[in-house]
Length: 115
Image (cartoon, rainbow, N blue to C red; front, side, top):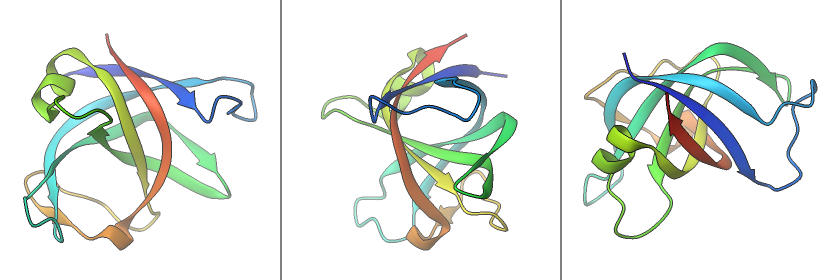
């Protein structure tokens, strides 16, 4: 199983209640957006130690490359800078399926470090 250490880099002053700026997540697989005309692909991540954010439990996230020219395969294999969206409570995304924009909420910019 592929595991990442996720380091939050923006917002620059982001802190968890316990003053941490990183967390662990496992790669579940690839999925796409149901509204993407070009079928953009995203990494589906499972948070190793789910946490509370703005009163909601975060168990899954999706990641997409932050920079033009970086592919989801590059991020999957080597890590890199991504935009992260958290999956809303009560929603469970499944690999190789499409998700709706209402299933997720943009969260942070982060550096995925392959462990």
